[in-house]
Length: 507
Image 1 (tube, rainbow, N blue to C red):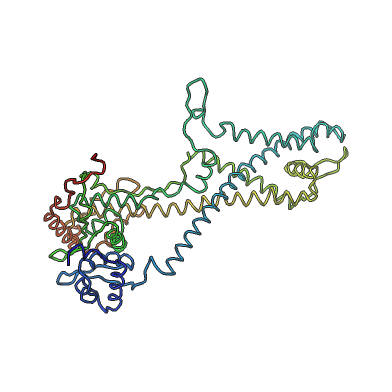
Image 2 (cartoon, one colour):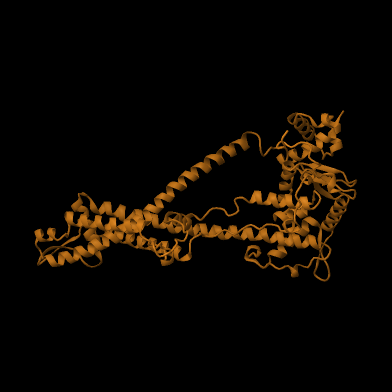
């Protein structure tokens, strides 16, 4: 049978046969065992087993004779097919859509509420101030009081004018920009690029998303560059150094990469497992050593992209809303509509600290509210207090989560530095020489390096020597065997041959 015939097959049928054989097995199978159980050619088995291992979380073992064994300790429950995975994908899609829509609506509500209440409270305070002055100068005459704008349509007009002015300031002035950021037509000043106000508020409350959202693509590029610069060969410890993943997670990822990049798990003559990606050697452009040896680090998450001064401004605005909301709610409960006092000069609004509330009740009654205390208690008390709690609570909770997530990112980045250093000297690694220079790779715990070393030693048969250095016999053996296999590979055998057809060539 020709090679083309062997490789021309129905993948679904081959995988179904292999799964039946694996499910019936009482022990781990080699490719030869699977060939006997299924009658399939070895080329087809070698091509499809990486995909099956990925789907069913398979593990690789090496027998005493050096044979590669496929192991499935978690059984044969697919993580891609079936009702459960399909339901998870549907639920994830619905959840993502709902979160996106809900978040957008919530952001709009936050923007409108934060500045709406702030401007309204400031406007009411100014109206009350001017009304107090007008009342003091008007005596007890109702007609003169009305003419001077102490209430009724005059007070309503003043409230509307002030609110309109503040809205104009928000939209059209440079309220939250420094002088350097303003545009001065005719004087050669250019406007700096800044976040619009609504985006700055969103950033303060919700942050700016995941800075490592494209990490899967970044990791794949680093992986391919390493493989191409190391003759198509990569070991699991080397992949751990590139990805920062611990052994079990690294095994899952590299199995998936075998499927995506046509890799083959192989065993050296002495029994070391490595992964060979011959398809990635068909390259026309060489990979620089700098690119191949620079493993990317994940970026830490920031609280927001705003300047600290702007974030503080938002907090102070919310504090103003919080104080005014507490003030109105307290007075709505304790005073209600009892805002008028009778003096020798006649009826007057309660003064002192309660005057703003009393005057607001008076304006509300003039507008036509039948139960102004109840309306003000809910609109100017409960609502802004609830909003203020959310405005403070969401960033506070996000800050706590951010600290925890950044600590995990630091650990992952630190593992890259640590694993790379171990691979460079597995026979005498001295952890005391490891330098964690930047914040990105420096966890808070002083014992982080030691703990990761112990975890790596449990997996890679590491031991501590008398002088305090570490000896990783398994890692040293694996890397030595990988280097021996690389030395026997001629990249020219896999490089593209000369062009025999060019679609752009003119006839």
